[in-house]
Image 1: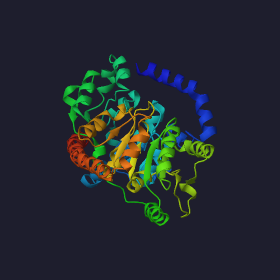
Image 2: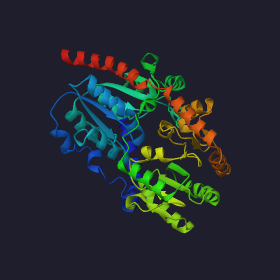
Image 3: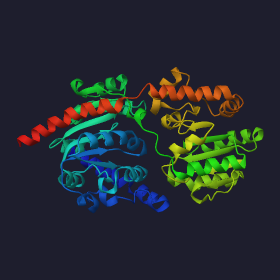
Length: 431
């Protein structure tokens, strides 16, 4: 089975090669870390002192944020271990480098034995931790030969659920290489059992993203806040993690807000860096005044847009908003995480395509702590909240209170992983 899988994966990569080359030329995507993905262990990993390793794989920014607290707790609980973190995306890599140090961060290898084995030889992991649902057959098989393997914050989204079910005959053989699944919710646990994970290896530990600490605010937050106050700008609407097809809808709604609030400002943060220039061109076409965050130099912004064309600042920028909109949800992309604006206690609005975060959105809806709207309703909801300060503050407060009720997943995850790691260490001592 693994030989056939590897052959099909190779064919798929070859067929996708023209697209990869196009993206490299157009946006520079996939160029970074290509050698690492092919199994070339970066020298920075080899410079660290040799010691047993805990290898955590976090695909992108969301997963890196989710495991950040866990990384800190593992380092405190097991100082004799090195904690190394791999990512798949460039944005995830940048955030991981900033948070965990360059000597501990690298790109996850392609799922071929020749690319995986050099990392296993170099790191010699005692425990391998995968965030959410990264079921790479070759990696799981090879890692499990010498390590305990756990999946933390495990989830099966509504979007991926039908695909997993189609491969239910093959999945039990792959999932047997995972010693522990720590699911976000009982529903995720049930779905894991349904696709072939062994029941005695599944626990429900909660969602790590509820425990993500508010990051220290970068200097830009205070600078922008001072500027908005001096310029008499407001209200401030923060639109974060927006995707293709959303910005025209958001900007149309914002123009209606401007008609009633001429000094309003939209802080607009596209999800993907390769789209920054595209969104800037859209703003120029619509003749909406805007400044790019990367070139902003304390000039006044009011009655226009601040285009956030930088990485890693959005979570803190939510604190400046009177209203937050979280993207990927006005168009069918499954939505993005609403926890960051909730941490700042500002009212949250999302579109009606939020299936990737069904449990979080559902929880917030139960507590009347989020507004879910379609594109046609969006400007009306914005205007309604901006004209009702009491409800605006109450909605934000309910979001922050809902968030506080869900903490504790990091400690439960650490407790379960500690047992697994201790068993792995006991086996290692016997060898």
